[in-house]
Length: 485
Image 1 (cartoon, helix red, strand yellow):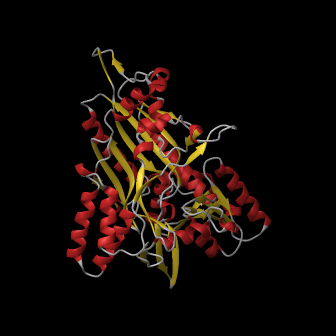
Image 2 (image 1 turned 135 degrees about the vertical axis):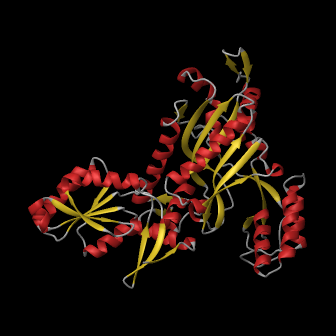
């Protein structure tokens, strides 16, 4: 059975629309750039990923508790966190087309074009210039000088008619209250979920009776007004994060950082992602965020290249110290055993739910040659599959439909199932293959006599005869023993 794997993102975009995973938001009005809706299968996939992340954090660690903080937060939160002052991207506008671009991304695209032309020495020189801009002041001026000196043209218009590079804050600003009218009433949609954890650190510690080290986990929406390349749900303006902030004693942070990096990498493997498509990329010292003592990305090899899916950071005591300064509230922890006070350091694990969803779809995608035809199949881990079992009566006969519906009702308590009696059995199999359904059960006339059915397995298309009474056990055993190919 010849097999090929995903070579471009367009195939996932097409399959996601066709099978009800992901739609363009407001599509009937022409769509809204970088905003997407999750359909019937996509919403189930996201829920399954959420559930497995939540269980890995809160059920497998007795010192990690959950939180669901509000999207709106007091404006001073974002002053303390540094977002008001420093959450910016360097932007440049093409005067001809009025399109806006991230200046550093324009240069990176130019470097890729040079490499495609075999001009590696020139590309290396320019990459060196770009690498040094982020570590000194005058970033906007430096990027502008590179764009002008290299005569980089606008991607869409082809014009060489640029504005100056300037910093653009990525937070969405709105107004709070029925009588709001000006900047005095300005409030932001949160650009990250972490700050909701930090401002509730004392509340959780006092009410959940936890002691350092302990963690707070949260899943929620965040919003960033980014200039977005065509990368589907990889980079969006409205997205969902799964974050855990782990509070530790200063001095224990390096050990905990390494431990959480290993745990998080293993989680991605446990949800069925192939090991060869994952890697850890530590941040060099001169590229660390202002709050970080150490940081690393867990990257996945998407069709658009190696990209971050999760970040692990040692945030030191930056966040709690800043909130203590701006709020006037003590953020110290008193260690009764050691009789000492300190502001805890924080080890952060932050993973994008949308990026994980895209990773699962990309990693599962296969095209296989079967008897001269091409079979498209999503070989994702059965525990993540939106539909676990497809149930088919062989023909539209009342006695077969009755037994099929009975099996549907019995399995529905444990699994997401889908009844389908439309088209040939082969076509029904193919529909479920594209949807990623790991098990299909066919009810035929033989089963009316001996209470058996045929179960067909998605990955290798093998079939076997199983007693109806044993169906649930067979499915559970297969799910537990599944491994990525």
